Length: 91
Image 1 (cartoon, rainbow, N blue to C red):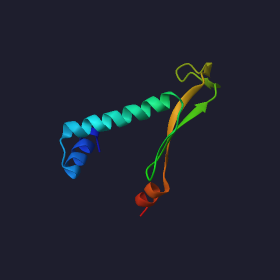
Image 2 (spheres, rainbow, N blue to C red):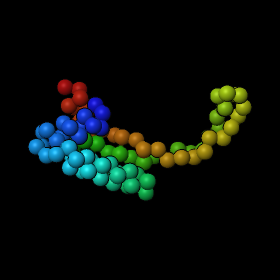
Image 3 (cartoon, rainbow, N blue to C red):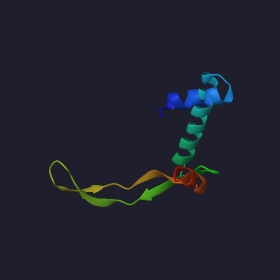
């Protein structure tokens, strides 16, 4: 499902315009992104949790040359589904 398909499905289900749904979804995703950028986790009951994880710097190899290189530390966003979502997917 694409973003536009999601917007259309929500608009049909809720009986509102696609432009209103797009504004709401865009705002929700922007808030999640802002919180993640600040290092905060975002938990949505019954759906899951977006968690920010720190990965340490490590040694690696340049895939083109094979030379050793240092891969810098970074933050990554992961998703941990809630039990209700896992159950729905596995039923």
